[in-house]
Length: 158
Image: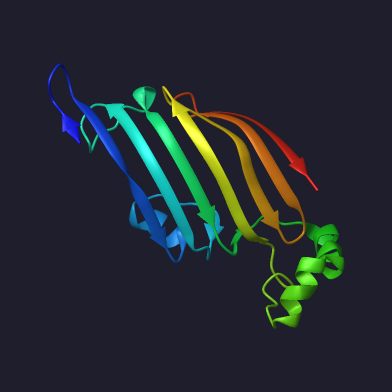
């Protein structure tokens, strides 16, 4: 919905679903490190300005994302990562399914990423983002200031 009375305001809600998060992002001209991951993203957003020209400082709303099996490209891990992949129960299950992508890769493979976020005046906050990784699981909470391009997150890695 686009309102033009007393200044422009845009409201948009919906969901995006696809087979590869990185390919969809590239279609919109955005490069992301998450590769080969099917996804579903639900959103309910609003901002002051035209639909094609969002004012990030006035961005408000909610996001919910669920990503399936994929990888974060070029995360490295070195020798420690290779050893952990050898003893990881998840990695063993993948090998039994004849999935050896993690064995020879510098990518951080994951089974899923899930989380919800709220956005208030361009600051995105989440308390429940969870990465079910092959080598490690990561729980994230904190804020990303989209206007100032600052990140203040706490990560618990197990």
